[in-house]
Length: 287
Ligand SMILES: C[S@@+](CC[C@H](N)C(=O)[O-])C[C@H]1O[C@@H](n2cnc3c(N)ncnc32)[C@H](O)[C@@H]1O
Image (cartoon, rainbow, N blue to C red):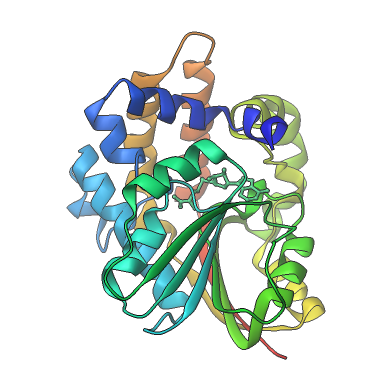
């Protein structure tokens, strides 16, 4: 998995900052590595603590989308530092919780941070999202929080999740989804920024981003029913400024902070125009 994790350079920044005990970066990105969710944008105060609370809230929203209840076996694919597994572990009983990631460094931090609550089991396993080392029909719910754009293929991932989900089980994901009319422009953006994005953030091939329609087709082709399509763009917008500031502060030599900041600003601008939407989707496995 080393070759793949080498491409996720932004995680090197977080891991270095955590090792240096940078309080702000560790607070903001040492548990969850995803956007925050604010009920109202006016509530965001720009602090790392506030961002952490908002990131917790996004995990709660994902659990609601996956209809997680007590006494379930739940898989979190691309689990980062285990922040979402920790959220479930804190809120539910008699759970069997499994986190999967391609990066052993993230997994070992997750193992340190997340101790199973009295009635729960927690396990973190190294594996690829598209080759899950689990038996057929073995999970009630599968989550993928802000990571599907990194996976080798959304289609393979949906098929693989279908295999490991029990009949009637739920899949919940969140993703940045362009509206249909911007798709022709994504190729141009890819030409301008694709190299930077891929070298810093790993696989992020803009041309192959999925629209809402694409997700609906994928669900139909792979045997799921769409349960929820929730546009939470407006609730996530404060994430751009805080991540821009923290990434700039934490940037090591060799990281192009200016370009990174510009890409962040472009993403914020297209999101504010309604052209790029932050969506939570949930799907029911039909058989
Ligand atoms: C933006 S982070 C999100 C982490 C976590 N879901 C969270 O919300 O805190 C993307 C995650 O996807 C993981 N990832 C990337 N490619 C993967 C793959 N092929 N299989 C499993 N995980 C992968 C990365 O290592 C990283 O932890």
